Image 1: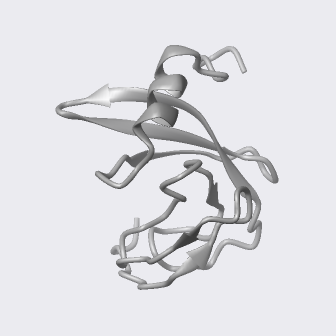
Image 2: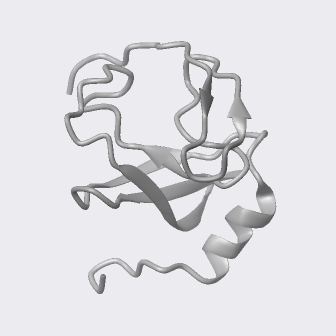
Length: 105
């Protein structure tokens, strides 16, 4: 895997319309948790897909959460660390009722 490229970008969520100020590590909407399949390697913005990444599950990791996304365009599954600004209610919904069960969907 290539080295992480920090790319600072503000964006408007394509799913819910939330305006988000990026910090170079922001890769999903803090309101609805959706993302965009933008990278091949973290921060490079080289993905040809550009599909929406639906949050499909969340799991506890240490003292935080990991959000699992699945691209609606190509099916890629990615795991990202939740951050303090993320909507905790949405994370809890995903952890209690995941749409994705590993190996089943």
